[in-house]
Image (cartoon, rainbow, N blue to C red; front, side):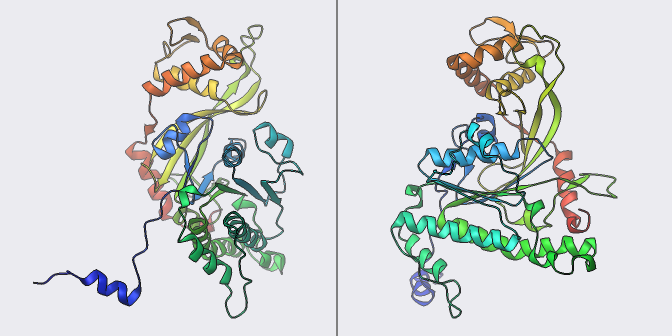
Length: 398
């Protein structure tokens, strides 16, 4: 048999050369190395660029804070960030405290509050294409009725000759999928039943997300879509919650993350020795479950501290101390005694307070905990629960 010797050249002569595999152009890391490790397999990497990422979870679990850190990281690396705020609730002052440059005079920030889902997605497409065209110094052709994707085709041809890994990061957040309103929902709204309204969103996303994944790949843009959690009525076994948007939000993202609050974070851990038993709630202990991952191992879990009061945001020192105690690498699991990497015995709240004024101590604790612990792989029962939940139709149970 001659086999396929010479067949590749014949094939390329007929249908063109083989496309190269698209590399991950960059990674956007957060301030928490355990999160970076869970999503990329490396504490110094993080979330992949050029991909669609889904973050879903209950209210006040750090979804927006996590996405804001990714946008701020893109800016720090010379890139650009944008937000399609469907919830109309973004607080610029709070985002600034998380490191995002989002003032009126910021040149690497774009903010819009779309009225409809269609308007927001069209803005995102144009933002991705025009930002990358601006970096390349090219002018995109106008779309016409005869060629409605002229700009996308032109940019794809231009990007085919470029090294994506040398492009600047672009991070775009969608907040949130649950808050999107399709244009048809404003028409004869009272005549639509709940299932029709839910199906409209699922149908819209099924059509648009493949487009968005294509454009994210071509332009090397990171799309971070936030989503909420809904009860899944009638489910007796397995996962009892679902998320708006139907199956599309499960099929198309390269990285799908589910966040869950597992306990409260009290002020007794704030480091104030005068309030050792103070019970004010100042945050949450959140579990991050990577249920889908096309760039690293899926079904990985880790936990972090999300503070809702002084200081607000993801808490590096608290997260490392909590995970170190839970793993037994900072002294006994029970109690508040902490044994620091140098052997010093102290209390949890004292160690946290010292970290706020001593970056070297924070780094020492972080390096020690990360060297001794790894994100947990989910159990078979947890994996099966998500598999069974994905078999049901979420569009009728939102």
